[in-house]
Length: 218
Length: 218
DNA sequence: AACGTAATTCTTGTATACGAAAACCTTGAC
DNA sequence: GTCAAGGTTTTCGTATACAAGAATTACGTT
Image (cartoon, rainbow over all chains, first blue to last red):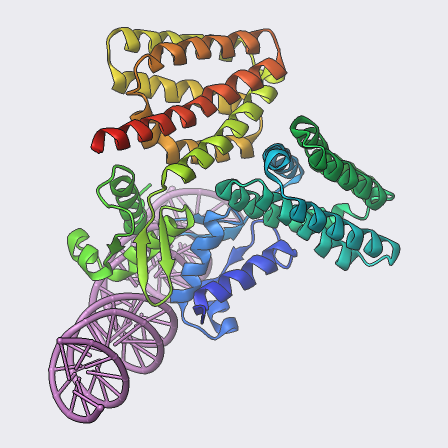
């Protein structure tokens, strides 16, 4: 299926914002970007709408759209919500997960482990996403899956940043193991708790990272 | 601030979809609606995007946009997520809530009670929204507040439907009381549990309602 | 020189025009 | 009568044109 140009541009801009090519508050110039992408303003405006609705940009009527990079506080808030969503995924999945999916989780986890050993953060990142994706799916709640994916995607670049913290990868792996064990045992509460802290700790680590970066900058 | 036409139309369409003026799968004709609203296709297309992204419509490239009314299954799924969000609101609010906000909650609750006694479902509905709004705010997590409002708004018309179930109003009031009590006591777990069941029960009641409507139709 | 105001320019929001893809309708063969 | 192929028509996606509001600048007054 041939996607439309506006969608492609939206993806492109989304990536550019998420990887920090645009800084907070920067104005997205319609005609300028239209030139850059070799399209008219129409598909760009459609892309802007998508950005605004997903919270990556703010659209002020008759003024323009401005990129909105979440600050440390907002990020922690988002991780807090993500933790609750993933906890729910785990809670539901504990009752519904298939043996097959458990196998897939273990396999993804193994690939994670290998990536850690190979110091391949890109691979780790990819497999980690796979791990969580399976979990969302296994919640058996399509809406929850969709919302989880949405927020996960939004937090993706910050998760990555957070992986730099020393020893975090190993700890993360251990947490994954605990999650799979709880799921296998059908322990809904345990799975929920494990996931909640697994995600929440990322927000906290992120907080510390920010603090240390601040300190280093002085 | 003068809003733009496309936003006004998006709101209008949103209301029309939510109150059931459009049935599931119905195609939204661009030129037809453009005539109806006396605008060109451009603002309509922008409004469509908003609908598609909030899940109220589906946009199929080169085919058009079709309204997507959630079925019973999806509704229950949404209530399940809403329950988790509200539980988190309660959990966080238990630690942060001010005496002032507690007072407001009690006041909103009282107005709810009066609405129940006066058989004024509109008023109940309004005050109930107020009650939950305060809770979202008192979570102290702006992102959570925003997401909760978004989903609450989306579930609004179905909540209303669900209020018809006999005895539900009185039960709901009792649940509100329990929530406020837990918050006052600073009991995070208790508040979370109370809210989770308060919301989740709505999904279940809804399920029963659907089932009984089905039965009645036979 | 500083401030307020008016004119100009720039940008956004909306309308219209055009090209392309899908839906449809007709027509003809089996 | 049914099905398929080709053309017609509708509708979507994009480009361009136009209108209205905001920003900026230039100028006049104090």
